[in-house]
Image (tube, rainbow, N blue to C red; front, top):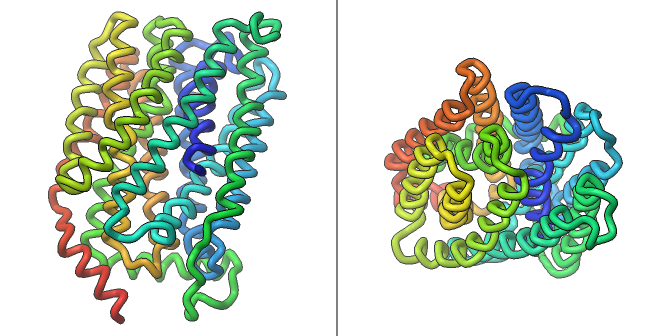
Amino acid sequence: MYDWANSAFATTVMAGFFPVFFKSYWASGMSATESTVRLGTTNAVASLLVVLLAPVLGVVADRSGSKKRLLLLLAMLGALMSGGLFLVAEGQWGLAAALYVFGVIGFAGGNVTYDALLIDVAARDEFERISALGYAMGYLGGGLLFAVNVLMVSNPDGFGFEDKAAAVRAAFLMVAVWWALFSIPVALFVKESAPHADAAGPRGLRVAWQEFRTTWRLLRTLRMAFVFLVAYWCYIDGVDTIVRMAVDYGLSLGFAAETLLTALLLTQVVGFPAALVFGRVGDRIGAKRALWLALAVYVLVVFWAARMSQSWEFYGLAVAIGLVQGGVQAMSRAMFARLIPAEHAGRLFGLYNMMGKFAAVIGPLLVGWVAVLSGSSRLGIFSVLILFVAGAWLLAYVDEARGQREAAGILDE
């Protein structure tokens, strides 16, 4: 249900209305490439801050056994920041960017502890299926709210709004309420394992940063987990960049905002059953092969996106991405969970999220600056290709059986 809750921010805010509203309302009067650079920089700053915080959050969660509490605090931060966007007036792109940055910290920072809860709520042979179920619920919940929001913007009069801008601002407020409301089941029903005896002690930030060095030393003994993280760093950069910059790219090509938002909604509709199917595929062929399959689709998507000229093609790309996006995320989370010892899940998932968000610093900047320097948005989006190819190549060096033996060895010590 937490995937259901926070996916409203991922769909309505991050992927959908924030980039549209940023370009047309908060950064009105700027050129397309200038607003793209500012949007890409905003995403990069948000991701960089998550990079700095993620390992600290993971260590604190492990030491205190407070994964759930941290998750709920960060969820409330994200919800408040999303609601705050409702108050930002036209032309105030700086304030909008600041609220968005803190919203992303709530979203991505919360996922550090949320991902680590997978080990508390599922047996090891259920990781792929339960991880995929979570993402499927996210596509369904986020898609339902996003569908309502798209209808609001398409027909503001029918919903009692004076114009489309008022409908978009109301959508940000609805995300805040949705996120907070559907986080309640986590607070009431999820039980996390008690912290280990050696996890007691001070919980200050200074101690957490000291333990971050210990976590890196631990990761060096988990060689397959480390190799996987590097591969993940590459390909998830491409995935996150496409999520955050797709609408901006479509606007740069001259496509109507309504077309792009409808395409995003199509991604959510396709993503729900596709994520469930990917969970079964991962059970049958393994998470690694399932990831290769998804990355091959992303490579084709990048080639197609760089050459498309008709708005209907954006719908085709939306379907293709919907088929594999949840699969990439779910299989990555499940595969990493298999490669690490359960007692260090919080801190290691802190690194996992740190690597993913550090990658997201590079991707949006890459797209924005390649577009500015070349004068072509098409070359900007094409630059993402190298991230998928590098990730797939590095994934080949991950030996899952060896990784599980390394994780078991840590547990036996």
